[in-house]
Amino acid sequence: MATAVNIFSFSNTWRIIALIVVLVGTNPYSFNRLVRAADDYAGRTGEQMFVQLGNTKYIPVNAHYKRFLQREDLIKKIEEADLVITQGGFGSIADCLRAGKKVVAVPRKPELNEAPDRQEDLVRELEKSGRLIGVFDIEDLPEAIEKAKKKDFKNAKKHRINRLISQFIETHS
Image (cartoon, rainbow, N blue to C red):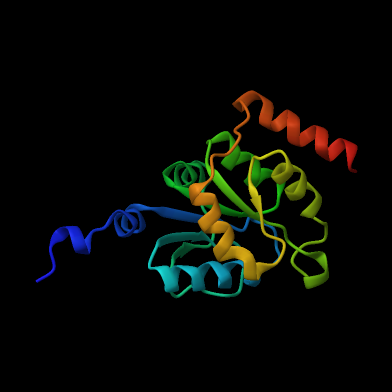
């Protein structure tokens, strides 16, 4: 008979209690690529995952989801999360950084009809500054999640996050 120690190893215990929250934003574009990859990851690992689905067409089978959340409910979900996977939009990233969360950001791609604008530059700059991990090829999502779990992120002070992102947008517009 297996003992509790064998059944509940440290890594399995972490997986049981961890919550990964996935944010795709509220814009009118679907983000099937991210939701499908996150759902596949949840299916392979058994990790608890919640997806804020927005207007994405793909429906997760391995993760809990809700299309839209009231702002206060969204912030609560972010605060509950051990890790947040988000689209590369300013608002979602800022909310996660303000909450001091580990962030994996997947920029939407206009050429895939996921958004009218590019999110890649913002994600690359924030990754370069050590604030998040960017995923530029969706096949790299599982590796990025595992890396983010172990990484100590450089968190800006709450009052600086909006200013830093705003400065980036102003200089790259």
